Image (cartoon, rainbow, N blue to C red; front, top):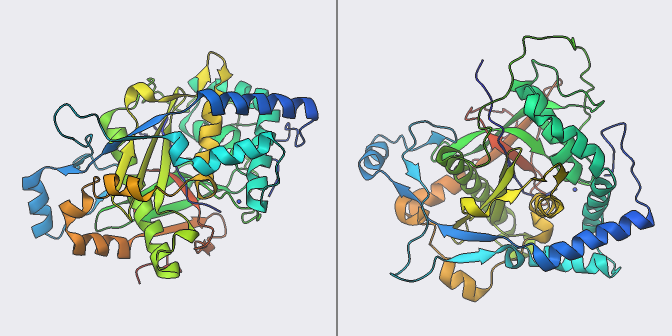
Length: 418
């Protein structure tokens, strides 16, 4: 059996009901707890910002031409023979990198946090997101104790634990998630949590494509009916332990995979905006931030298909998940804003677009016609067990996949290639 990496890339597009998955959780927040949460938020606003630096696409030119001529440009997210790399965007000699900080990317998020501190009224979707953050903070010690077990778990336990006690808990309805069915053969981490298995496939076979280990649906609707997976033997000593990618940083292959996923998801989202709203910016940004997370750190990458620019983190700026044995709450807020980015991301200014437009270099590499064809053929499909019912993605509300494994699946009810 192949070891699974501790890598779950939260690729967020948006949908948003308040439901507790773990039976030990407390669902309300009292006033003293709310005051402590506000203190954490205030510290975050004043002290915690991270920097993203512009990157570009690069290829092995000879192999690229061979793939173009052979009409074989597409590759999976996890391809071991990838022709693509994503180095930093070079500027003129002695000029600094092009960069942006999180406060500017998530201006609406910072404004929402300020409104929360001062008791301002917020809309229904933003209120739902804050309910999730309050619940997470109220149960933070429970999540910390559970996540401390990450050192000695099987791949299935790792997937279920990260989903149950971190990623899904930042949704208004934590039960709205899918874990890839490749994990369903073994028992999940046992904390009384409902586990929903299924499949996700996104991207375009004309460029990058693959499936997701974890899919989250941050919607106020209860759209999934999770099954309780308790039919297994607790005493199975033969299960394999996850030990791959157990370091603090991500290797180049991990980073390239996340870049390919961010590009693919942004292209799909850009397609939905163009088809449904003629690209009207009132219906959200084409910019899609995603996050790679292991038990030590988080890494943020984003791509904007409308303006063709790519941002990623330097390794020295990766976000800490834990501070000793406690969750680093600034990172929790960062994850929360990533998951709800349709609420909290801000469109770049016209001046910023003048600087950033085209720096991703993908249109230049592919040519405008091929780029448009990749956008046109981009899709996001998902399916759940055990019923096999397919769901179409809601264009207005979207959804979120996380971490690709490189498998391509076809779903008869969904055909985004219009």
